Image (tube, rainbow, N blue to C red; front, top):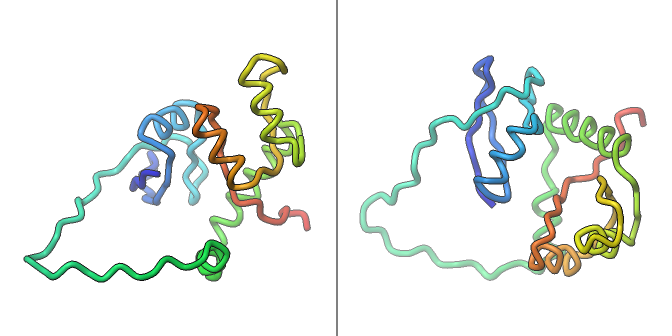
Amino acid sequence: MIHYQLRCDAGHEFDGWFHSSTGFEKMAAAALVECPVCGTTEVSRALMAPALAKGRAEPAATPEPAPESESRQQIAAGPMPAQMLALLQRLRAEVEQNCDHVGADFAEEARRMHAGESERRGIYGEATEAEAEALLDDGIEIARIPWVPRSDG
């Protein structure tokens, strides 16, 4: 994953995480990167300050990694900003309106589409962490998005 500081043509700055630099370029060209403040899709990367080490400090001790379920709970523990929630709700509505729900068959259907055995189309559904990693390892592009409750309740 790569982190970018982004800026819209109205001057709003915000963060974005992308699979790669190419991933950002493709998403921006397809107008899939949107300013959370004003909604414009005219977005570019802003200048970012590099992370520089200060002096010759001793290396920090690496904490023991938390079990996966605990680390996920810690990540999701904080409140989600209202703008982020609204953006994710709009994303969910677009996915539900324009893609086919394949449920737990997501990994199988993605493989069939990749192999040309099934019509290429937008799909969404559920996959285990192992299934998602296997798809990525096999060169099958997928995206994981937080599935928030609908805005209409």
